[in-house]
Image 1 (cartoon, rainbow, N blue to C red):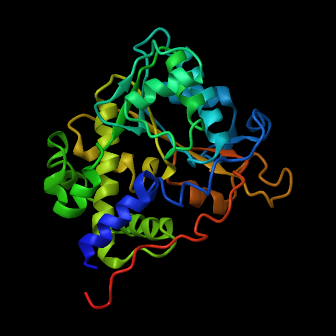
Image 2: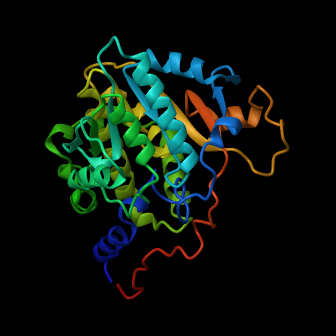
Length: 328
């Protein structure tokens, strides 16, 4: 089996969930098993620059002043989707007298959209999303339904920001020459410093359970960076945008914010990481201030929203990368 075949098999097996930001780093073994509404009483929101806990209203006020708001997620954590739905509704209300936010999502490809006029039961909404290219099984529907419904209820259209289907394979095979025309030449304008590149490489390897072959690291880097660039460019096509993507995509060190130098403009951008609290921590241990360890870990975001963890199996259990034949 040659490397090209390995890459092809890997992309077919991994699909959407195999890319950084959607891998085991951000996704678990299935939908979270939790109780609706429990995130309201257990969530903790921190401003990373000060390490201080802040309230929901304060967060909303601070975010509303930005033209691009990045909201991360663990894809399988229902708490994250409900918390972001609540935040999207609040941001929509706070922006009523201004140009409305548009929602740009990793779950749809650039160029696709769903009208804010979409209403009706779950089945009707899903039909509209699937018509736009949404893959319900890959994304564990209805996990993201609260996010989509919150945006549409506030008059926000839902726009795709990801690479179009098949683009990742082309990038693996052809390199940067396979980038869409509107993204051509932009990655070179925002190269990563060595520490940031090392952080990206570590995240890619960790996100694939330590099994990512060295030969696949460079093309995986390219796919990750191209996906982030696609999401950023899609967001800049609107006067104000909220971007929904995995936590890996919204990190400041190697995610979407790191690509701002590629743009001709400098939009005011802010990022929120949606993380999981330690279930073994004693009640009240977090206090109202982040610990030194938390502060260092959270430094890749502007704000952090902690929720209970999803109930999942070890995401690396049974994970196996395709192997190259030793004779090839």
